[in-house]
Image 1: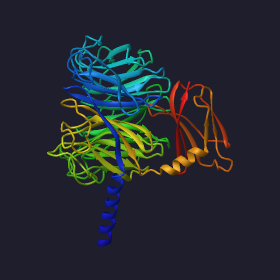
Image 2: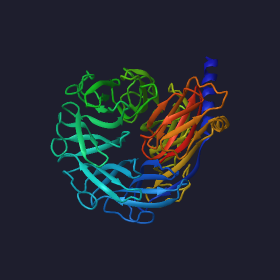
Image 3: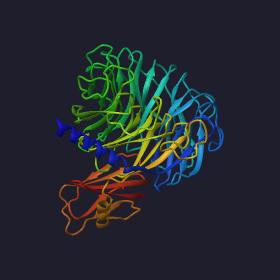
Image 4: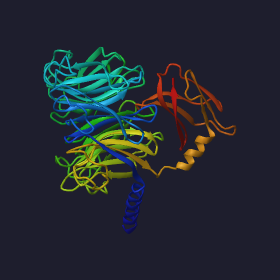
Length: 531
């Protein structure tokens, strides 16, 4: 027993020591004197950052507000210094969800609108999905509302290799753009062309209430969607417990036919809020749970209590069968926001926590408030490190951009207490947008730089062909090459046939890409521009 306690203490001490090597390199706060919340962030081809936030302000950094909450898009340099900003919306509430980079250098913005004036037209009634495209400096090129005459609540957006846009949420009723309903709220998602034309819409669910929370386009031309269901009928074939709130994931082919579906959970409540495709053809799922039976093991608190949820990570094979699952958190509420795959195949899990025990250490928040919580897992789901970021008040973490294995940009909002905990930027008002860059010094920097200097990737910029030359004595066995776009999607995969390899890139859209070369546990990455 003493040996077991010593091993546990040694592991906890190791994780604490490692977390102290994961630190903020720089930070900035943005906004006005009212409420401003960071939502989503991407990196441009020159290292500049584009951020989508909500704003209720009309002063300081925010030059205009249409009324209530607006979408607020702003661009910074690589150190977070503000370059330009624009607000979008109408006189009612407009809440953004996601921003993505379009292949032509513009931006795709997605969220919710209750407006039907200002920049918004075509609202079907109540809350609609709102999708708009801007050019590279924020001028609107097109916009459209999507929904029925009842409420339609947006949750997620993705884009395929051809620039088609997929938006997901939950919809109530039939009419307008919504062609069918199973009753109550359904998963409702649409495919939109790069020019803003509705290609198709689809709903999934049963006769009660089912909430679509995430959507991801897949390499086979299909999509995978996830969320939470409350039904056992309609499209749902895997849930056998009436009124059991279960995580539901559905894979559809390129013709929108269901290929497979899986329900995940235990006796109480589960959801899936994010899905990513993995290199082995499977999927990594992120959600919440307060069960400790069925598919769920090792919940940190008391099952079934509303103030105790763990972050739940599930790795599946290509048809959704569970390979492993892990609960992350403490004995209070731990909320999931995103999961990203790093260049080395590890996982970055982001959310918020008001726990101070279990997997959580270093929480700055007091009085039942929340800290931002970032966890790095290895490919088997084992915690490599965890780190809390924030102040003594409630903090929100909404989005991340992974630059490399050791560099990440986080977007969210700090608590209202200035100069406490990690928050050291100049807060403008009640709630600000908080952007900070994290450096993970636990990564073997010297080894990565040595490998990078030995491999020649050219030309850069490139147009039709990309050359990769390995050293003469290099063994190409088990080497994998990937090209990843700035939205984090793998666009091209290859294995070198010789030490001098050529990749055909003429079908790739113009823009900034990441070349990832991995051999066993060694990895290098390099940015390239295709023009």
